[in-house]
Image (cartoon, rainbow, N blue to C red; front, side, top):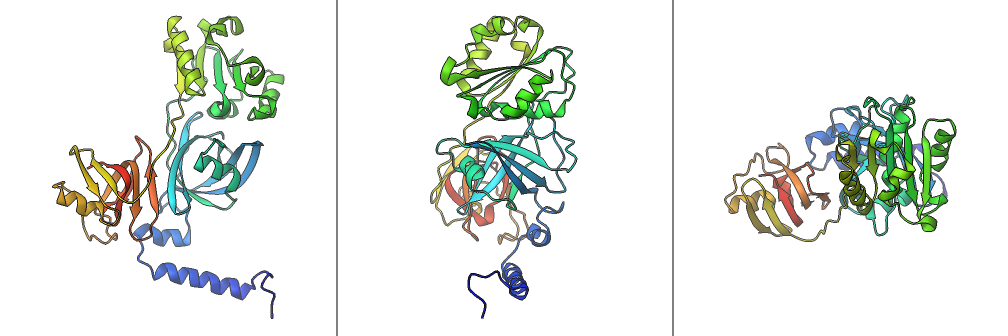
Length: 363
């Protein structure tokens, strides 16, 4: 008799796999689920990615290398991607800058995540997620991009994880404009994400690097930029980092008449309260209705007089699909909660989804 601690036999693994497949087939499935059973990264399914490896960068930051599904459309240097991660039955969406070049030979992409205090998703991705995990993906988006064609030397000003879109730019352009400068702030040496790579780029002349260790010298004061970069007025400027830093840089450059040269990327916080039921805001009809945690949004909307698209009312035909713009909803079949931050565009089936907190539905 094999030990309970010994690896499962090939026959046992086969039976386990067949049982799992049979259980899924015996459960009401959505059309995309049949594709997912065979290949979660196939082009016929929702866009997903499989985490190939996790590479530590600092004590609280890690790079996730991801194999995207076949429908991945690529990205431009500096853009970000929204990822959906399931944690304890709740699907959370967050946006992270792409740190890989668009033409990476193996076709993989990468994001680099910095764990923030009480950040559920960032801590999960940095400290808990395992290689092989399948995550949801959206297509890349964002206008904070760099193609090297401005005709001016570049100045990059970053702090903390604000370096992530810029490293994607640096990795994508082996020929940076002459005299390109990077000013990067971090609390100390060990907190500088990509520090070895940045210093190598500096030593080879790709960029002029200035590191500010803020625990020792304090935060960057934009008033000092002219002294640090004498030809500041001749440069195109990209900056990404904490809100306070960005606000002060924008204000100072505007006072110098350089606002038109500035490209800014702001990372927005995502704090979404979930629960049982909540206010459903129908954005197109400008109507707000209270929904409990067990009544489908389709029914709540119909009872309030909202024109709700529908079909089978069983979650099969997808005739009721609408956009969740913000908030949280619960799938009444599985109990899983899906969240969206302001401005998101996540499709849900209103006939099998109920409010799990305040939410905005595009209807």
